[in-house]
Structures are given as C-alpha cells and as structure tokens.
Length: 309
Image 1: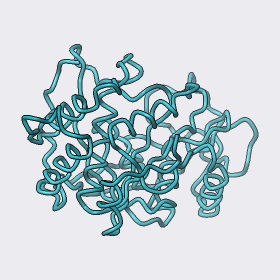
Image 2: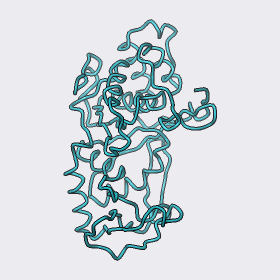
Image 3: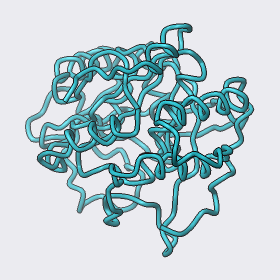
Image 4: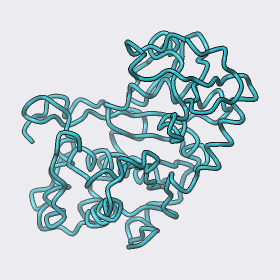
C-alpha cells in the first residue's frame, strides 16, 4: 500500500494551479457507491482544474473505526485509478493541532465547559445551561459559545446559503466528554493546515457547512469554496451509507463502476467504456468535467432522483 498515489494521468494533470481539493473518508467500513461518487467528483474537479487532490483518513471518532477499513478504502481508490497527491494524512496523528485550535478559541473567550448529559438535553438546540463555566472543568464536554448572526456563503453551483447557527444548532461540542475532538473542529483545522481551498462532497454534509465556515472565520483561516453533489438513495429512499449496510464497491470491475458513476454525474460515457483502460476512461471524464464544472456552471441535478441500489 502506497502512502502517496502516483500514475501517469495523475502526474500529467497535477500541479498547474493553486487548486487543492480532498477526499476524507472515515475508516468505519468499505467505500460504497455513494462514497465513491463523492471521491470521483472531488477527483475530477481537482484534475480538471489542474490542481492537487489529497486524501485524508478521518479516523478521529475511534469507537467507529473498523480494523482493516483504511487499507480497503485506499485499495479501492487505487483500483479505480484515483491516486492522490502528497502524503496520506490521518486525524489520529493530529491531536496537538486540534488542541492548539481549542486554546486559540479559549483565548478569545469562545469556549465553555459543559456537564450536561445527552439525556438531560431535549431537542437539538443547546439551551446554554453551562455557559458560565468558562474555566477548565473535569469530566465535561467543551462547547463553542456560538456567536449570533447569519453565516452567509455562496456555493459553486451558484446557490446562496445562510444559517443562523446560534438558532439552528446553538452552542455545539468541539471536544466530547470522552476526550474525542469533534468532527466539526477537526475538518476545519485539517483543511486549513493542508491548504484545501475547494471542497466537493455529498449533499448530506451541506448541513455542517454553516458551522464549519463559522469556525473557519473564528480561527482566521482562509475560506474554501463548496460544491455539494446529490447523494444516491436506496430503494427505500434512504441515502446509501455504512449505517444502512450499503455494500462495498466491487474492485474487480472498476470500468463498470466508473461508467456508472460518470452517468450519475451527468457525464457521457463512450460506447466502448468497458474496454478502455482506467486511465483513458478518467481522461474522458476529466475533459467532460472541465467543460461543465471549472467555471461554476455545474448544476447538481443528475442524480437527485436516482434510485435503484
């Protein structure tokens, strides 16, 4: 298993712009078709722009990690020609960076220590019960003192969004009572440290964007642009996910998988797609993506109603 992906198409397409994108799977199981769709879309976007495509393993939530899942994920990406630039990174190796970000937020008076149990909290919006606890306390979660006001951003698809995080979420957890840093904090710090400036991911993660942009601004980091693509639904109408036991991608038929994913992204596949090399198929996909996506003209409508897996 290589820590750095490399092949001819990768080297030919990389390093010609300041674009830096990423794919950040969690090692809680193999990649299913939905996660492969996000991987391919983010890869195509980076390569169409002549940029870098990084891979990070989001393994901070250690109780959910599955032994061997990271290796399966990386082998699946390689089997489909999705080689990454630079060294692989893992959240589990970056705890000091998250602690430093917390210290910076604490210096700004934006943190408090919360002793509330999940059972004691009713509803999704934190009521502010422990806001007066601004000094370190044992056996507590650490929450952000969420600033008031709207967080506004515009996505690559042209859609304008805004969220008043104080009213939709309230004071959210940045470090859990068990000592595990939150997903929201980690991805913001990771993206900033890696210079990520373009994020392409599934639409199910759009709900986290307001909080992540808010944290980015509070920490003084440069902001990335976002493009959210529709998710793939099962026959029951639920998003394909590890929680719903979506099967892992078959690495024995990469051309078939890539052809299916290209079609779901609204790209035209050649009639001889199953007989092309992976490199040739990806070149075709990159060229098509360049025409529709690099100037913000991508409209994520191709798979909104796709059902069948």
